[in-house]
Length: 438
Image (cartoon, rainbow, N blue to C red; front, side, top):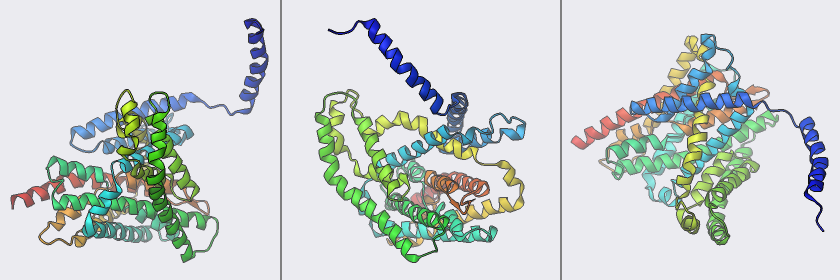
């Protein structure tokens, strides 16, 4: 015979009240109010800044960065109560999850087949677009900060590698030149050099970690990291082709609704975790997860889901919440006082110049005759989320207690991203229209 409800309630009180008291005494108290305040300011700032940028035909990311710069520098106006918001651990965690989601979606919108079909021109354009700006960025960093470790200079160069494919794709789509030969070369090369940029990030991050441990530089370490990155990417892609389809087919037979989103997120986070365990950046795993997961793999779950929406469509609300937090947080870390120094302004200017010239070298990689090489070079100029992500990771790494990317370099990188992003749409549109008129 079951005990009466009062007895159960008394038993629950006896068991749960001491447990709650123990948890309250052992677990550190988290002040939720500053986190809520930070979310309010960052979300409203991101939306207002993004809307303003879009009203001027510019990417929303510029407005989000600008909003973060304003929030992070309110102390210059005498408002000091908000100065510690960028250092709140929950905000940083949410921003990092936003980055993982962003790279997951970028991977979903790409495909291995697409990268294989773009041809020799795209591969050569991408290679030149990674190597040249990285070397130029290293020279600029070394010229301004000769006392810093060599690996710190390489990390600055790594922030110049990747191209923001979204910005160029928008311009090509607006001008209806996406299917042109130049458009295909640009888009293919942008996808490839994003992958190369992530591998460069993995190599440089691994070398920094080894240097921080006090290990002497060993060329074999580079080969090990490259091999690890290649094995992870190839292994995830190959195994994914065998494991993912039956896994999601099995999931489609389970009872219940709305299973696609949690399973897709779990898959993304699993590969991000595995990448981290392999010594790579978690965003490499997230990008790989997006490459592996294809629409045909989840068709059964989409059909049985009430909303009938694909994975990118299901992720849109989460992206709208989390991704802008990352860009606003990056802006909040920009200290405008650092630009009071002519030397710092000079560093930002030369870093931006290296970013522009470095991508112009891409035009030498166009093998097809009669094609507009200048248009290809202009299309590869814009940096964006990947450059900011590399800088953000560098800001978390240290070599013997010294941050690889400090506030000065981070501010210059944000300026470089903003300028290259602003320059590309009008210049590329002008060049493509001029080429079309000929």
